[in-house]
Length: 387
Image 1: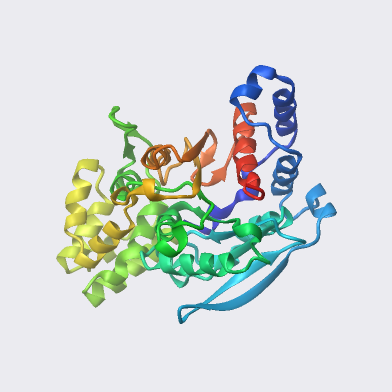
Image 2: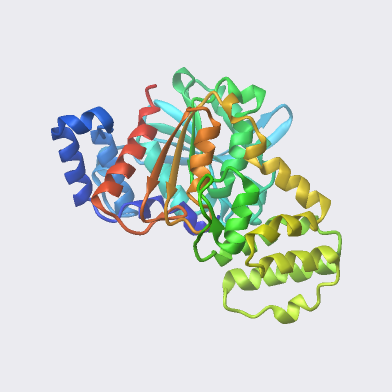
């Protein structure tokens, strides 16, 4: 959800092990039957992501992307976004940022969009005002759907109707809701999710308390991430009816996001509404079984938004798109089990890539197997250019 969550160039820290992994895959017949065969383009893209702003073979051999701010209207709704193009496109993607004050201008999101453009994707990053205010709202789905409708209506940008969607973190929720809209569902070819959720209540339990479970297995624990808690406050504080509590909670969230060690107890003492006190109590609660009760004490509008964003309440078997889910075992904002549950809910229409070293959507460490898995994931994404 933060700006750092778009660090796709940080997904690859070393290039040598990638080349070695690809070489083994190419030479091992048994692996060919069960694994992907990453292409030369996959190697180029991974190398470019590793290079960041530095030189790479992909940069040296492709036209520099053009980033243009465009305005468009869908059924009278005025929209704006950034369009990335380089050379003749083979496919298109609506790339949806997570909650970040930089929004569509996040430097690492821009770098990833440019890399995809060099790989012959037309990339549209819609401007979503809620994103810049660290909010994830159900109404964002309409902005995303309108971006898709715009691209799908431009065969010069999306040849043969090859258009998909990609989303990071909690933005996967409104993106999937957009993909289920009647005007979109029959046209969207693929949906890519990185560190996304499925059951929003289980996910809230996780970033509030650190507890999760895989299927019917035992509870597991990871140290909860402070950031998710306070972005949750930012995302919902506008729904609180008490103006003074809205101001106090916003101040608390701003302070904690800037410095997680700061003591906000004095500010908490100013909270006067039952809803405000319930939210603060939930932020300090460590029992996952108490979370639903706290949620029930929040304002009705907050509960309505949570219900609307809960993908477990949707029939994901209605998704026509191919689904690519990337998730880290080390994710401390959304547990990897959410992608597994999402994939099951699609009825077999999803490919899930679970990778050690992923911290939400930042790839902090690499190994032979994980580099291979990341290569396979990127290979699948690039294959959408001709499917």
